[in-house]
Image 1: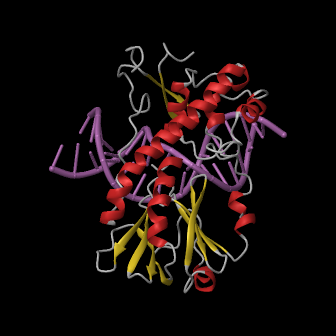
Image 2: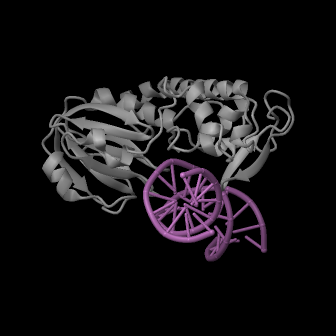
Image 3: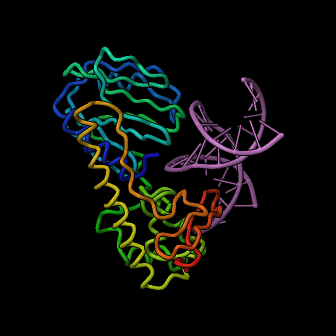
Length: 274
DNA sequence: AAACGCGCCTGCGGGC
DNA sequence: TGCCCGCAGGCGCGTT
C-alpha cells in the first residue's frame, strides 16, 4: 500500500516519461472511485493539454498541465499508475486511461477503489480544497522538533495516532509510523504529551530517516520500472517491526508484540520501546 | 473543541 | 472442496 515513499517513487519514475507529452484523450471506465469523477472536467481542462511536470503533496500525485490545470491522483490502498503500450490488454479494475502523444497510455487501476482522480481547474491547485487542511511534509524543514513539541504537548492521544494524523504531518501511514516509533524507542501507545523533548527530537529524526531510506530503496526499482514500462514492484525496505508479530526483535531478540491501536495493527518491541 | 468510530471496497488467507 | 468471515488500509464525516 503506497505511503509517502512509494508515491514519491512513482512520481520520480513517471515524471520523465510523461513530461512534455500531450494528453490526446481520456477514457473514463469507472466514474465511482472514492470521489465521483466528473467527465466534463476532463473535456474542459485536460484533453489536448501537455504535461509540464509531476509533483507530490502527501500521498497525492499532482500532474501539472500547460493550461495551469492539474490532475490530482490518490492511489488509496491498491491504486496503480502505470504506463502501457496501446496494444496491451486493459487489466481488470482499470478505471481511467490517459492516451498520450507518445503513443503510450497512462492507466489508473485500483481494485479497491479507495483511490481518487480529480481535476483542479486552471490556476486553482494552490487552493485545492483537498489540500486545505493537510499538515506539513515530513521531509521538509517544517517538520521539526518545535512543530512536533507544539502538536504533542497538550495531546492526550497515543503518539502513534498523532504521527499518522494527516492534519499534523502527511504521508506517514501505519507501516512507517510503526517503524519510526521503533527506531526512536518509543512505545506507540504512549500518550503524546508524556514524551520528553529528547524523545520528540528522536522521533522526528527517526521518521525522516525511515522515509528517506525507503525512498532510496524505491529508487532501486525505478530503473526496472522505466525500462520495462511495467508495474512498479517495490524492493521494500526491510521492516524492523511491521508485520513481524512474534518474530525476534532485530535489536534485542525478544519477540515483537502485536496490538491494536485506533483500529490499526500496531507492532512494537516491549523491551526496546518504552 | 478534541477525539473517536464508521463506511467505503475487493482480494486473500484461514478456519471449518 | 468450497464457503464465509475478517483483515488490510487512508480519508472524510458524523457523533460524542
